[in-house]
Length: 199
Image (cartoon, rainbow, N blue to C red):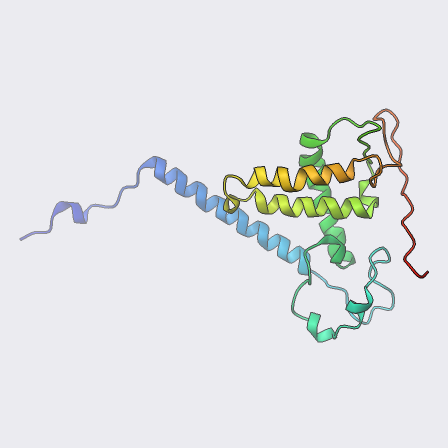
């Protein structure tokens, strides 16, 4: 007896399924590449322990991290992905990526009119609180707009991250309180930070 004809024919995938498969593979490759770039950026050139000056005077080492054994940090990668915990080079690279996101996505979509009740600063990168809050917002955006976050991810990002962050950043007593309150008159001034107790 001969084999049935249907077993020797090649498998045919419908075009609409093939398009979905191609899109899925393309998305996975892009995500993998993006994660690899982020990992490389965060682990690239951690400051060596024998540097005579601090890696970044704006972000000095805390006493706890300065006393930690050197071998604990040798191959573990960064202790945190949070921008304020990064070394000077990684901080600069992360700030450049954050600036790209803020200027090309956040401000065009969510950057409402500048008023006395909603100040903004074009030099936001010089405000440590703003950098910290915007970076946390960006990290949450990356996670919650990913396909794996599900269909409610973007809504969760808006509710739990975007709205509270913008309220804190753009309040009159927030980090931009002494900066631009009118788009026609740009202004930048850093507010003094409170002195640490016992100083």
